Length: 530
Ligand code: HEM
Image (cartoon, rainbow, N blue to C red; front, side, top):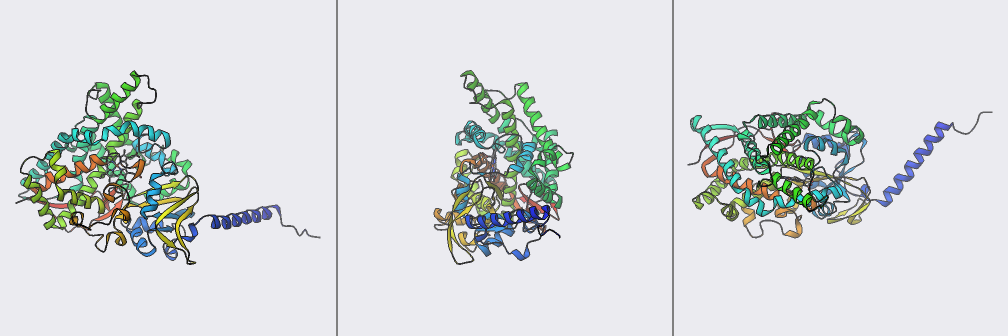
């Protein structure tokens, strides 16, 4: 007589299926993921989920559209069968995530590539290591320290102005330039000087050219479908990420190459004594802190030489393309709005002399233009966090579930992935009003022109451009100040006009202007200002 019992493999499979269903039902009860609104499920791809659509759209554009449909806290289907991802654009939720840095970390899968490109400095570090590095580095970015950088920043900005002016004059009074290339040579010059007293010679030194070429390769690889898939594979298989960084892939090589160049340069400067404890640059300040800690026998109170080098690489990489990108998009807005450009020029010319640190702080319309530029075009348009433990996240805007319940907070499970789209938060018409997507600096000077603080996150200017909490951008004072100085120096004597090029905005890995599929292109016509 045949046995009525199923064979062992069938039994095992049935048991596994049963356990899966029990776990799924229990998770459904304990956590709220399935109760929060979802981006339209019918348009999600079976393999790529909603993620291919967000990759194909402009930077965070798809999230902005879904937030208008579902509210500022919703979920999307992950690619490669990854569990649903929460898209958090609710300012209360975002604030909670950014404040609790020990519970919400950057995705561990991306740490090896970060170490490959930037080294093990502030952007890479987590937990106590991060706290210790941050405490030691913070004084190098204080208001006082930035004031000490003002002369270098003015000189580099004036150099950029004369390069552009000469180019316009030699072209007969009008020239078309790739604004982002000019802007990034200037921001690289600035960070070279203030980070380690090095002159990148307006993009003409060998190192500057190599950094530029490697960065362009990195950006263009990230814009392609291969870059999208590589990112998903790294997330799905974190253990192979380490191996991937060792492979001779072009994108990986390009990232590592930049670190090689800047590390070699840092070591050469340290060994030659150019960077030393008497210098005012950031690297010298960190070396002095290291020496002081050593002489007092305070072990662990200074950074190691390798950490100093890695942080210098970090500042060079994250401190020049970021500012150059947001600045170039702001100049594009001025080109599209000639009356705003003229109003800014008049305010700057009223000073009637070379702009001092204090003049820059006093210019109200300049401040409004910079805030508006950084609201609409944050160099880092979104970030990602992963929950390390189960948690309850408070919401500013309650959610109504499909069964009609109201949720004022959401229970999430350890391992939950969050996408936090800064650009979506800044362009949310429900918060910023119907003209949220328009460039309107005057809103910052009009009573009631910007939403009240209770409706905004806690970051700089009520924006999350520089993130928020203990991991906010350590360089934000430097970024805002150099942004203002470069903009004021250029607009004072040059006039910017739009071209017919269609410029799209993509993320790779920072906000990129893309023309005809090619990244790093932002063409503008330039003339001398009357
Ligand atoms: C417009 C220019 C800039 C923007 C929009 C910007 C934005 C940001 C954002 C959003 C973060 C947080 C990223 C995350 O945690 O996911 C960040 C972190 C950071 N930024 Fe910036 N940044 C800019 C310029 C700079 C400059 C000029 C420097 C330094 C020279 C700098 C150094 C850093 C560092 C070291 C971190 C990591 C901080 C930490 O984790 O403790 N940034 N930045």
